Figure 1: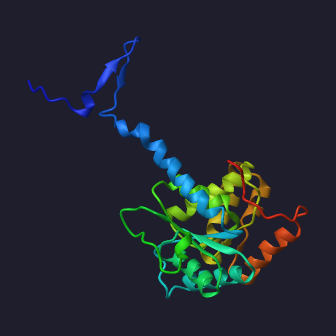
Figure 2: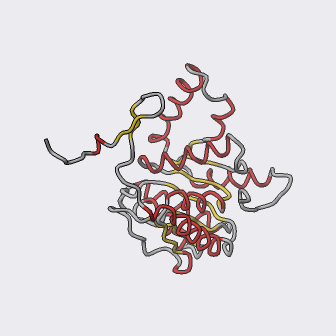
Length: 247
């Protein structure tokens, strides 16, 4: 009989005689991970605190420069710069590059929040060198995206884009951050999702409120996006622009 112990053998019995699975191994350095996390937060806060109000643009890293949504992202980012806002993206290629490009070509602030990935992510050339951040942890990166954005524009994308969109909507819905504009750009891409949210999540299962549908207007027009954002802040009686939440 072999003395070899497999992962499936790593069990013990509790006081009730129930077999409990055990970790195959524990990494001692996990206890020190918090220092890496703290360092990443400090680096991000020190950089982002010196930047004036921005708008975050989400979208696919796979979108090519010849794609209509790449061109649309360049246009809307350029309009934001004309209105005095900086632009925050994930710092990579595709829609992210387009957002930074539009800001840079219009003389605006262009911020890139890069993430270490085993594929597809490398920072684009349109990020301000002093505003080019590199992240190890997605959750730290998300804080930077959300805390310093006065609005969010979501272009067509994949799982990562949907994750970012629903994270923001959840934070607004639960009042964990200030209610700010969230605009979906790309009618043909987003209309089906919004219909499903209305028909299934709301009307069939009653898992959201009817007012939640107002959180996600859809348009293809950069000027309409700017109008939605400007109208929101013009109607804000406090007339203040400040980070979304205190930590």
